[in-house]
Picture: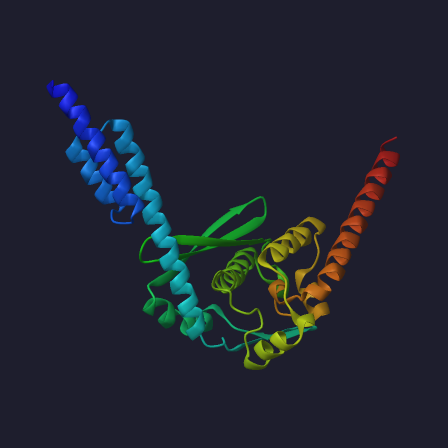
Length: 268
């Protein structure tokens, strides 16, 4: 038998051995890759094994992340609402970012979790992404967008800073799956009363977009529904909020059309 034939036979035997071991759950993809290198497998086989190893590690990372999140959420205490906002006809209590961090950071750290924020701006819209990561390398992102918060006679820089802080608070709460109303009484009442179930992050993002498009007053909307953020809006009130914003957009469009028509008449 030629040396080439022997080499082919050896590779075939190695392939069969790896397949059998993999099916039995004996070998990890990395161990299979080592066996393949020893047996002189082709580059194509090595590439497939490398890809398999990457998927294997990603799957392990995701499982570790999910387990850590579940364990952390079981230990995170309700976040206290420690700040009172009061101006004009608006008045409510909310938890600031420092209070959320004080509550969640020790627990997240204990389970190998951390978070950071990424901010983007463009066309009058601010987007904040909360990146929640596990020490094994897996991470997930939660994003929200809004226009600058010009309420309360803020200047342009204050309006941007206020919106960023607002979005950081709520992307972090959404990423961790914390209740939008996290005081003790609210948590129990929400569980007992389905009418108080709050909207999803996707619904809140859509409302933020609708507010921006309609040039609506977010604070007026929050005051109307007696909430401190869009994520606190109940599913029951979501339809009403959408209708209000649609009406505002229609009103703006009609006013714009009337102004354009008047301008055309004056130019003739």
